[in-house]
Image 1 (spheres, rainbow, N blue to C red):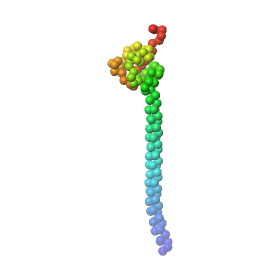
Image 2 (image 1 turned 180 degrees about the vertical axis):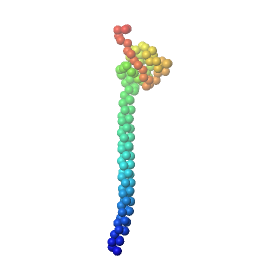
Image 3 (image 1 turned 90 degrees about the vertical axis):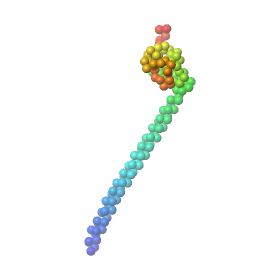
Image 4 (image 1 turned 120 degrees about the vertical axis):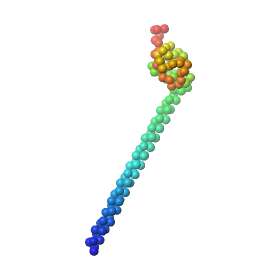
Length: 124
């Protein structure tokens, strides 16, 4: 009878083995899910830190510091600026003519992108 008990005991131990195998697969899947969640959270945090550092750089262009910036070919209108002040500052009297997207010279707002072509001193 001892030999007949052995196969029954083997069958009994095989069933928990397959159950523990599916249980270990579930544990691996849970660990992978947590790993993915932690990585995703880390990426979100890194993106928010980077975004906050970029928004901090934009503060350098506000206030009286706008008057100190150079007139590049592409110019972003700052707070309190008008086409007249930009024209005087950048020596470009033809801003409206060179920027067809400006329909009304009085409708200038911060963030408006305009093209600047300074006049040379020889033409004056």
